[in-house]
Image (cartoon, rainbow over all chains, first blue to last red; front, side, top):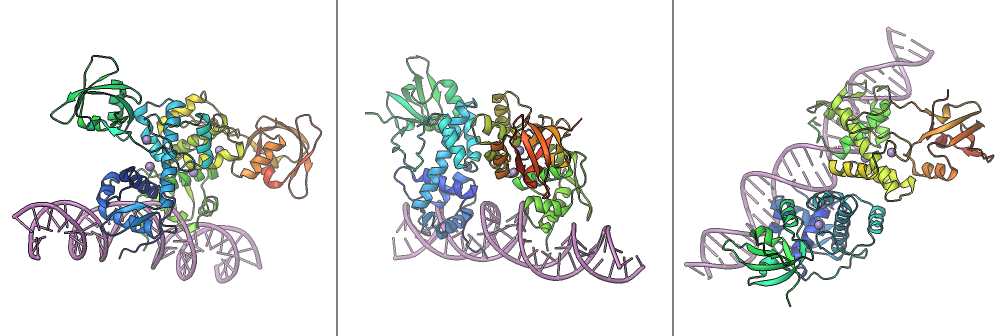
Length: 230
Length: 230
DNA sequence: CATCGATCTTAGGCGTACCTAATACTTAGG
DNA sequence: CCTAAGTATTAGGTACGCCTAAGATCGATG
Ligand SMILES: [Mn+2]
Ligand SMILES: [Mn+2]
Ligand SMILES: [Mn+2]
Ligand SMILES: [Mn+2]
């Protein structure tokens, strides 16, 4: 029989579950379903259930879990999740600024190292970088105490009419898309003119004052977040 | 019953076993006993036997193991061990030179990170550092192909008469001793005048042309290696 | 050359984090 | 309000890396 025990509270796995719950819950901190977690983490739904039960049974509990109704982060869980996100984004910034990584390669390396650096390492790269507020994808870096300005960008895919918008951030999860967007000139702060939508859900856009029109696949457009239009 | 299977060839544990066999085998690549490994790695002797059997059964085998007669690294095992040592020493140098770590703190951080950095990370910090030959403790950094000049330093504890010697390297394993030696001025390249030996096995030494005499405990003296006397 | 102590291996087990297959729960449509 | 589809949980299992206890082997010594 499978028995539930206390999880190792500092493992890479636990970190990744907490980070995924934070991300999938969104700014409203909605309950997150097991299946959504399973898909995001690339594990079987049964594995998620098992882990959630262990996270909820820990001391302190890292999540609030109710059978069949998904999970929420507890205070302790949210604290740890934000700590890991802070590591992730500081490392990405460091790889980009100090080690001159191409932007599409920073995520994978950060995804591993975020679990293994010490407080000292965190501190030192932050100082070396001059206490940055943003990572190279345009995401806010949580403060040491876990505070972070509220996210209020909207996906480019929500823009349905012609409009001029400013890029807020780029999702870092798909290296090929990050590379494509970089070579196209779609980077945080860039001005984007949305020319129209395609049947397939993609977008036609121009960058800055250029007349050149690029077609973005639905996946690429979904990776772009823009400042909320006025 | 405990069954032997193929080990995960890229785990932190396997890395640490291989590195320990390399270190304990010394420049002559002597066979290494299970108990010696158990002590160095802080695990039970039975755990070592189990792991050695798995390492020997792998494809390719990482060690040559015979019951009751210790292990040797195979070619593949030696290659991996040197790769990890290269990571370790590049990371230490990076923490010291770029992130301004106190020297006594570099080892612990490197001991963890050495298992998780990518080839790209290794490359980039090496370039940033200008392709260093030595880590901050005075140890040679293996080349990318695993080649490394032969070690021929001798322990300070082997010096029994008054003599003037030059420090080659400092063992990084005990942070307290590394700190003590740093504050004393005993660093790679420093000139050391050995004044005499103590009953307890320690040494009395002066640094450079100073007349001040420091007493080194046997443990501290053992952490210091010097250039072979002529 | 027999014995004893040190060293090493085998046997059996545990915790973490995964898996598949079977079962249970929830909810939307009819 | 009943049922089927989709979602989630339970049951049973594996690999890894560690543990303790018990038994085997080795080698120095008398
Ligand atoms: Mn991660
Ligand atoms: Mn990121
Ligand atoms: Mn290590
Ligand atoms: Mn070192």
